[in-house]
Amino acid sequence: MKTLLDQAQLQITLHRLAHQLVESHLDFSDSVIIGMQPRGILFSDRIVALLQQITGNAKIAYGRLDITFYRDDLDKGGALQTPAQTDINFSVEDKRVILIDDVLHTGRTIRAAMDALLDFGRPKEVELMALIDRRFSRELPIQPDYVGLSVDTLFEQKVKVYWKEKEANDEVVLVD
Amino acid sequence: MSLSVKHLLGIKELQQQDIETIFKTADNFKQVLQRPIKKVPALRDTTIANIFFENSTRTRTSFELAEKRLGADVVNFSASASSVSKGETLIDTVNNILAMKVDMVVMRHAASGAPWFLAQHIDASIINAGDGVNEHPTQGLLDAFSMREKFGDLSGKTVAIVGDIMHSRVAMSNIYCLQKLGAKVIVSGPPTLIPKHIESMGVSVEYSVKKALQQCDIANILRIQLERQQKPLFSSLREYALFYGVNKQMLDSLNKEILILHPGPINRGVEIDSDVADGKHSVILDQVENGVAIRMAVVYLLSGNREMPE
Image 1: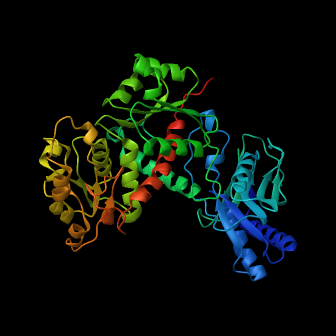
Image 2: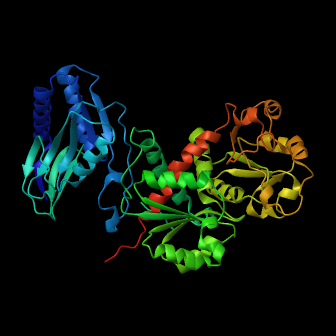
Image 3: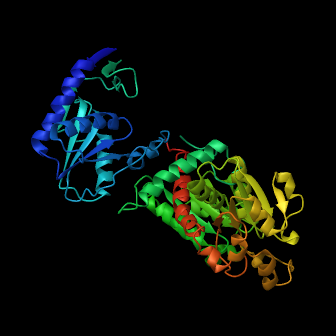
């Protein structure tokens, strides 16, 4: 097991990502943030809290998206996953959407998320933020716009992102 | 997350955990149904046959909508237009449909136990959409789901099932489902319409509808199924309405508020008066809405059990 980001490094990365978002979205009047269930929302919760601090805008549109019913491996005999809450109580029509997930791996989750998102309307643009980008494991042509850390991993390895809200402390590790 | 069963034949065979899983999944689908695009592609590679050997509009429409909103392909088959009238057996009929690569069968049949019989002979998952006077599991589930939506946990609550218990598969599925969720069940209606020894199912019997309503938190009022009654079991509909019909005056005299359900189709003025059916405590239309979400959940969860080609 190898630590990719410890608590202090993670903190710096979160701040950098939040500032990058502010740089291109300014006051977020035209932008919405959508965190990916189940684990991506722990990351997006932090980002949104930072954005509120930085911009002073407490009303940034923020939703959570569950993609269970949009998966493409339902017919591959895999066990059904327990769906989590989808909670998007605003229109994404003509908005600049920022999808946020913790780990970007094959790209299939994001493919499903884009399908799900389009069922809520036609956004003006969709951007992707990933805390960890496992850049050589992609199976679909999907690239992130904002990256916390790019790592080169073997397919069998696992990247685990821990948050102190759920686990003992903030940490990103690579497990063999 | 999946069910302990391969088919949904009856609620009798479900575990409490299965019912909770179905409800939790239905909560998610109910959310999907409130979106501008009320559809997900989860079952886009699945074909489902709705085989109805008995008339139905509501249940069949509800199943069909549920299947289509999951992205499945749907074929409908009804007995009147089929070769059943030419003398084909049930297994042959279903096998012919399955030979066209259908993955799942939703069946309603006039004979109690027909889906169990079929389950022994075919590989596809079967959902019972009502078999004779035995069970109608998705109705039982959606009734309990609608009650839970208003009351939260049903354990410790008392539910009265009023009316034609004898001919009602809805009553059977309700009793099994509510008891598994920890609720107490009272059945009420004329003695001729309440099966003998029904107490052995753990329900209590109260022949006076008013007394039953006084003891309950929720009343599920069932239709008088004249089409299933081969001999007269009460003298007239007017008499039934007078002694066993639920009206506003009766509800007002209770000094408490109870939730009113009815699985439909309603005989207005017979088992239930219009001012009760359309009143503020009635969740009859919520039941119909929840029906689609519950059926989506059942179809989705059973599709996970499909055997995959190598």
